Image (cartoon, rainbow, N blue to C red; front, side, top):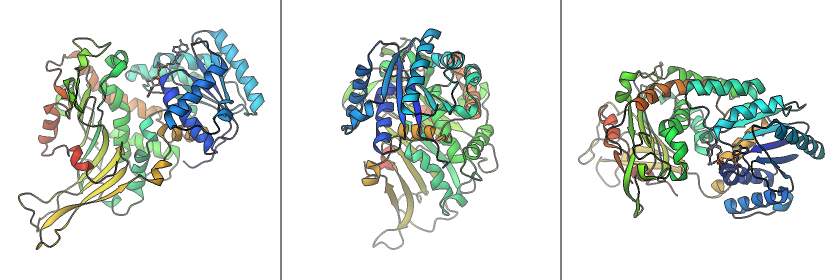
Length: 500
Ligand code: NAD
C-alpha cells in the first residue's frame, strides 16, 4: 500500500469538458501540483467540442478558481495542459491523439508513462479501451493505467462484457475502477480505527456487536440526471458500489499486510460471504422508496415523477433500505442495515456500530434502559468519530447518563485534508490500487444486487411515491429494523457533539 511509484506521467482525460473533470479532476490535479506531488507531468484533455489549447487552459484555470477560491502558480500549472477534439468512435481521431501524446511525452520526458482517465458516459468505456489498444496508444515503454468511473456495468452480465473489452487492452493490475467513497478520509479511516485500537478489534464480532447501521442520505433530488437515474435507481447508483464497499471495510478480517492484494482479498471474502437473497425473500430483506413532494429547508420541492426526463409513472427507486447478512464465523447473526436515498431530511453519511447490552443493568436511568454503547463514524459532511458511553451523573447518587467522546477532523488538519479525487489520482500515479475496486469485488456485488433488481424491475411498486421529501424514507424502512427489535439511530441525535 505504501509503495512509492513513479509520479511522472502523461494523463489523458477523456471527457475533459464534462462536469466531473471540471468540478473534481482539475482542482485535484492542481492541489497535487501545488503540494509538489507531481514530478514531470502533462495533461491532454479529450472531448468532442472543437476548442483551442488556450480555451481549454482557461477552463482549467476557471475550474480551479471556482473550486478552491485561489489559484497561485496557475499559469505555470495550466501550461502543462493540451486539448484534442476527438470522436471516440473514429480510429483517425486516435491516430492524431497518439501523435500528440508522443510529442508531449518527448517534450516533458514522461518516460512513456500513461494514465487514461475515462470521465465519460459508461457506454464509451469499452469502445475507448479497445481503440486505445488497436490504435497503438497503449504501446508505451513506461506504465499504462486505465482509470474508469462508475457505473461499471448495469448488472453482472453487462459488467462482464465491459470487463472483457477492457481486459483486451489492460491487465487487471492496470485497471483502476473508481469508487470515490474509497477516497474519503473517514472511509479510509475505518481500517485504522479497527486494526490500530486494542479497545475495538477484540469486540468487533457477533459476541459484542448487535448491529451496524450505515446511512448515506442526500437532500438533493435527481436534478438534471433524470435520464441516467431512470436506468439506474438508488440500488445500482449507491448500493452496488459505495454502500457495499463500506460494509466490506467494516466486516473484513485483518489483512496479513497492508498490500493491495491482501486488502482486496479480505474484502472479496466478505463479498463471498454475503447472504444471497432469493427472489421470494427480497421483501424480507430490502425496502424500496420513491420521493413524493415535500418541504426541505423551507422550500417546496416536487415529487420524483415530476422531475425532468423522468417517466410520469416511474418505477425507479430513489431510496433503498436493506438488511445485509454476512454468513461467516465473525458475523453470523449480526445485521448490517444500510439505507440511502435522495430528498431526505439531511445530507449525511454515517456508520453506527451498536454494541450489545451489558448482561445486567445495575444503574438507574430515569424512565429508560441504559443506552447501548455506540461507535459512530461520521463520513460526511462532518468527519470524525463519536463514542457513546455511560458514566455517572454528576452529583447524583449512582445514576448513569450517556456521555459522548468525540473527535472531529476539523481545524488545521481538515484544511489540509486532500479531497477524495486528489487521493485517488495520487494513488493511481503511485501505482497503488488498494482503494480501487478489483473485478472480483465488482462481480460479487453485482451478483448480490441483481437478485434484488430483477424482482423490483419486474414488479411495479404500487405505493410509489411512498415517502415525502424532507423525511428519512418510507415507514417500511423503520419496520425493517423494528422486526428485529432495533431502530435507526436518529441522525440529529448522532450529530450532537461533532463540529461542523
Ligand atoms: P458529462 O456529460 O458532464 O461529460 C461528458 C464528457 O464526455 C464531455 O466532455 C463530452 O464532451 C464528452 N463526450 C461525450 N460524447 C463524446 C463523444 N462521442 N466523443 C468524445 N467526447 C464525448 O459527464 P460527467 O458528469 O463528467 O460524468 C462522466 C463520468 O463520470 C460518467 O461515467 C459518470 O457516471 C461519472 N461520474 C461523474 C460524477 C460527477 O460528479 N459528475 C461523479 C461520479 C461519477
